Length: 114
Image (cartoon, rainbow, N blue to C red):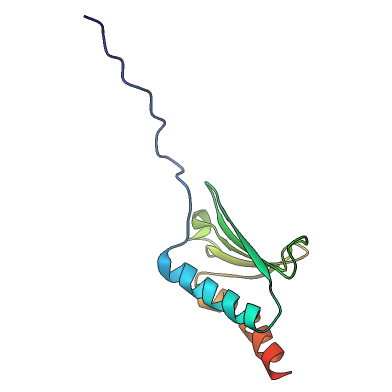
């Protein structure tokens, strides 16, 4: 008889980062309200090994107006959440998603009140 050799499986170190259900619900709620206000039209998600990124676009063919990044490696340092603007500048960073989304929430209030 032959010898059965097990198929080599790479270790699960650095598995894919994703959004938890409550986090994604909060982000998509904000996205839906921005779409209803007429400011955003499209979104994209990138789930990688070191970060999960939600990008919101004014138009499909442009750079994202905002990126919401979750980087668990920064959990104990600066906070794993970051709000990044269109030019790539970090607008807000922190440990709490609600606090990081606050500048966009304030902008939504301005859009609705106009």
